[in-house]
Image 1 (tube, rainbow, N blue to C red):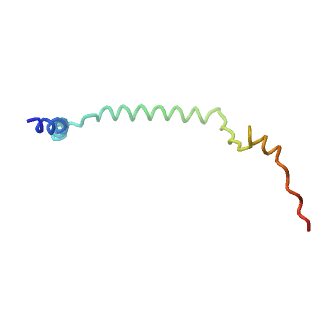
Image 2 (image 1 turned 60 degrees about the horizontal axis):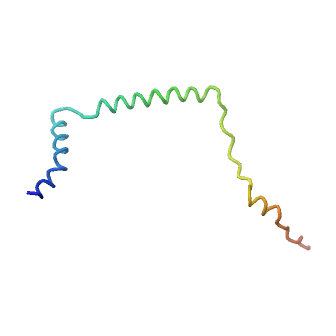
Image 3 (image 1 turned 30 degrees about the horizontal axis):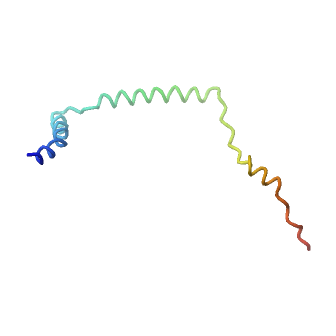
Length: 83
């Protein structure tokens, strides 16, 4: 009897979903539509504000800093090549 309960416990939600789909009901459809409308309205207002007044960020510099800057400052040049 315990094995039958362990089998039916995960199957019951699947059966409810299957019955709802067979009856023509689509659970979560309204929530998906509301969410997509909310995301579309956010992206539309954000795109127009970003294009309006702000300038794009400058590219990040990869110059040496910290310990690497000190090490490069103390580094010695090799002797010049003789021709």
